[in-house]
Structures are given as C-alpha cells and as structure tokens.
Amino acid sequence: MHLMFLGAPGAGKGTQAKILEQKLDALQVSTGDILRKSIEAKSELGLKAKGYMDAGHLVPDDLMIELIGEKFAEPEFPKNWIMDGFPRTVAQAEAFDSLLTRLNEKLDYVVEVDVDRDLLVKRITGRRVCKNCQAPYHVTFNPSKADGICDYCGSTDIYQRADDKEDIVINRLKVYDEQTAPLINYYKAKNLLFRMDGNAPVEAVTNLILDIVSKS
Ligand code: AP5
Image (cartoon, rainbow, N blue to C red; front, side, top):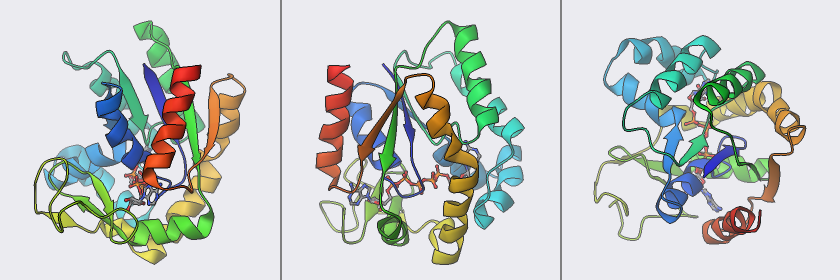
C-alpha cells in the first residue's frame, strides 16, 4: 500500500498519517518531522533547513530529493508507506516518479485533504505537538485523552511549533498555493487523485480515507 497525502498546512495530513500507520500497517514518511529532528540534532541538513522552515518557505528541492532517496535506501525501509509532506513541488514529484520507477514500485493513491482556509488557520495556531513522537494535537478540536500526555508514547513534552505563529502560517499558505497546489493537476492527470472533504472531525475523515482505500 503506497499512499500520498496532499493538502495545505493544517489540513490534517499528519494526524491522518499517524492514525493510518497503525490501521494500514504502513510507515508514515513525514519530511517535516524528519527536518525538525535534524534541526534538533543540529545535523548539517538541519542547519541548512532551519532558516527556510522558520520563515515558512520550502527547503530547496535538491536537499529534499536527496533526503527521500536516502530514506528509501534504508535497509529497514518497509513495503508499505504513507508520504506526508513530500513531494511539495513539481520538481520533487518528477524526481519521486523516477525514484519509484528505479525501485520498481508505484504509487497507489494520492489523497487530497481539502479544508476551508479560515479553519486551516484555526487548526494550525491551536496545534500542539509531542516532542518525542511528533503526534499532533489541537487545544480544542483534538486534545490528547489525558491532559498534557501523548496518547501514542506517553510523553509529557508537548509543545507549539515555531512556524505555527499566525504571520508565518499566512506565508506557508501562500507557498502552498504557489508551489504545491499545482501537484493536484499533476496527479489528476495520472488518474491517482482522490479529493476528500477534510473539514469533518478526525474520525470521520479517517473513515472517508479508509473508504477510498478499500473500494479502489
Ligand atoms: P510540515 O511539517 O510538513 O508542515 P505542513 O505541510 O505545513 O503541514 P502541517 O504539519 O502544518 O499540517 P498537517 O496537514 O500535517 O496538519 P496536522 O495533522 O498537524 O512542513 C514544515 C516545513 O518543513 C515546511 O514549511 C517546509 O519548510 C519544510 N518542508 C517539509 N517538507 C518539505 C518538502 N517536501 N519540500 C520542501 N520543504 C519541506 O493538523 C493540524 C491541526 O489540526 C492539529 O492541531 C490537529 O490536531 C488538528 N486537526 C487535524 N485534523 C483535524 C480534524 N479533522 N478536525 C479538527 N482538527 C483537526
């Protein structure tokens, strides 16, 4: 099962990928999470990426394409995967196509999670994230079951991302419209695109995705 999420910042890609990892026995490949861990570790990639991420810009394509190539080359990389945050530009999508062809793999579904713009801003500015396992929560819409404790790993280190402040969020949405939204037509032309309404509560959205995956 090879699934890819497309959608604006805050659409719920990470939330759904984390849930589906367990339900579909597939690995969530979140480039945002990988970059944040690299920043935390002060690795060369992290040092290069930090300025772009803090400003709400995309990290350059060559760095991202190299990162994904290395991830797929890891010996323990699994058969089933869910792409969350990659590709983000047409150049990345083309490089990903070449990588999959080289590996003799193919993409099964591209799910576009479509959410109203005003709701996106509310979702991102109220988001909190587990520092240990990156699970996303929302102070009102999607709190953890026990206050301040991660449902997935039990960590109490739950924080607000630096790029989740409103002025940066506005820039991230603009970058999405200009550089990532063209991928909707890119995957539509390949007959891989499934658009779904992501405005509903988390569980309802999960069920819509499971419907797509089970019927097609
Ligand atoms: P990344 O971490 O990928 O951020 P993003 O794409 O901006 O996506 P978000 O994490 O903001 O949103 P999401 O859709 O995952 O929403 P979530 O599930 O958390 O990237 C960060 C940065 O890294 C980029 O800006 C860029 O600089 C760089 N980067 C990463 N990949 C790159 C690439 N390929 N190329 C270049 N640069 C790259 O949900 C949001 C909130 O809503 C949460 O609080 C959640 O609890 C809540 N929520 C979710 N679903 C629902 C629901 N159905 N109902 C109510 N609340 C919900």
